Length: 125
Image (cartoon, rainbow, N blue to C red):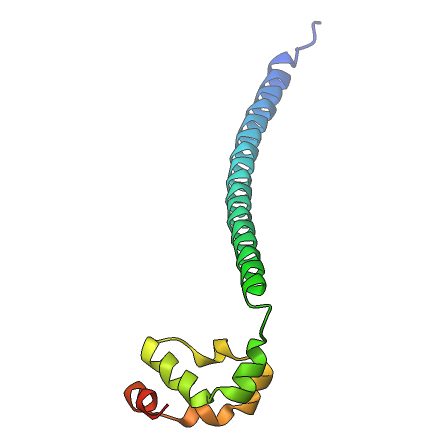
């Protein structure tokens, strides 16, 4: 009248659980490694942007120190013909809008339609 023992079944169940936990933890480890790689690339990008911002601010400081005696906006608005800048930037391959503030761009919208050559304008002025 001995009872049949279930030790074998229980140990098989425990073994399967342990194996599934191993697979699960390995999967979690891979996911964490991928997350860490993504975080590292984000941090690198942020560092590069931070350095670029610092360089830009240093350039702005230097420009401000060198040009504090005159106001370029006043010169652009009152004394310099916008057609000159437009044709020169077309010659160089730059955008003329970057030289003017948004208010001056609105004021000088008519300049967009001018298609004169730099050689002509430079001789006139």
